[in-house]
Structures are given as structure tokens and as C-alpha cells.
Length: 350
Image (cartoon, rainbow, N blue to C red):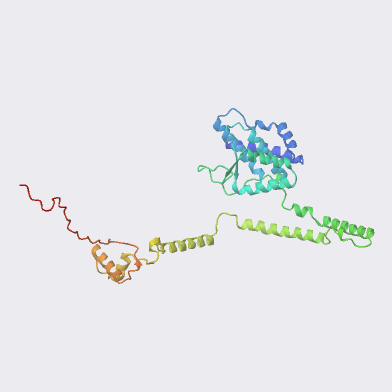
């Protein structure tokens, strides 16, 4: 199925190119282009059900990449309409859902808010229609991963430059000639206000006096930020955490482990009034007392040594181990008095 990817990508870019040339974000305009290209025939029916699902997943994944930056708002609208059409015209049963990564969901919600604020209600309707039909499948990655896939060389995916605004577009729009023209218009506007009103009216001060310097400063700030961001991306391609971060993380894990191993088990509620003591291991105590030349003592000697070491401790301490149980003294038995069933004064009849 992967050999169809380039063909599908060419057809999708042709449709989006025509939609961009229309200079509109209306769904009616997109529908005319869809019908003129007969784009629903991208799904051919002479396939098995498994192949239909695989091909539908491929087509949706290709159209999905145009729904997010760096593509322009109009291309993203066309991609949304395209996903809506492909989702409803696919031949797979049940329909294959649109895989959307959680990292991209924030951009999708921002796109929906921008469309609502711009009063593009047809865009909002299509987006919410897909949500109501549960067309999105929220995943960790937009593409289905497989262990047998070949590793890529790490290069970025190809981006259609025709659908992307150039990075220097603000500098091209706000140039020196435009700033001079805005300055002349602003000066002429202020002269007309002074000619009409003899006294200055604060209600007529709708335009800032320092509009041109602020606009020029904003363009310079944006250009400087853009240069620093490009330089940072070139230096840090995002391959993974640095060695310093890995070292600090390892030190943090080591400190957590050392603290957890030295903790004392909390006593039960009935013994919380007694002081808790951490008993060292028998092997460490024997290593400290015994010389290295002597052989290891027997279990009986080690047990006797441990009891002897703990004999001088206070009885109020709670030991974390117990090798003996309390011996209960057997209560002495009292002689049982038998019941005399014979009445007093009676004699043996025999």
C-alpha cells in the first residue's frame, strides 16, 4: 500500500491548490472542487475488507498532515473539509477513524477557536460534526508504528512550500514605503481634525500618536526572535536529553533509593507508644566483632551473640525480628471433687 502514498499525495495537493486559488474558506466552494474532481473515487472497491481499511488509513494519514502548522489557515480549512469527505466516503466497514496525536490536539482546538472568532461557522460545524460522529482516534503518534519499519534518516518530512507562508512575510508587508505612507496618512488625519474642531476633543483620539514607531519596533522584535529561534533549532535538533540532564536524573534516583533502603518499618497502632529501633544485620555485627582469621561461627553462636547484644537494651524498644515466643506457664490443676450420689446414712444393701 505504501507505493500509493505519492499518488494520493499528488491528488490531495492538487485539490488543496485549487481550493487555495479560490481564495475562500466556504464549504460550498470546496464541495464544487470535490465534485468536479470526483474525488470520492480515490477509494476503489475491488479490494478485500482488510485492504480497504489499510488504504483508508493511508489516505487519512496523508490528508491529516495538512491540518496543522506550518500550513496556512486556508489550507488547514481545506484539509478539514478533506478529512470530513474522506471519512464519510471510505469503503471500509466499520469506518477507519482519523488518528490524531495528543500533542496536536491543542493546535486543533486553537484552530476551532480561531474559526469561531472569525465567524467561519461552516468550519466550526464540520469540526464539531466529526467530534459528534467520534471520527477521531486519540493516539500517542499520528501514524501507526510497526517494529518492522525501516528506520528513517532523521530528516524532516517534506513540506509543500506553496501552502506555507514565507517566514519573512511580516517584513515584506511592513516595509519602509508602507511606514512612510502610514506616517503621511496619520499626519493628514491629525490636520483635518484640527481644522474641524477648534478645541481638542478626547473622544476623537481613536488612533495612537506613536503608531508608526510601535509597528516598526514590533517588526524588529519579531525578526530578532525568528533569527534566535532558527539558530537554536539548528544547534539543538531535539534528539534527546543532554548528558547533564541524564547525570542529574541518575543522581536523583540514587538518592531516592538510598533514602528508601534506610527507612524503618512503621509499627502497628498498638505499639506506636514504644520506641522503634532498627536492628542491624547479624552478618555486619559479626564482621565487626570477629576477627577475619577466624572461621564463621555456627547458627547457635550467632543467635546467642544476638540475644546477648540485645539483653542490655531497654525493654521498651520494639524489635524488628522475633526468634522466640513467650512461654506460657501451665496453670496447676485443682483436684476435682466427685459427686457423692449416695445419701448420707445409707448402708450397702449387700
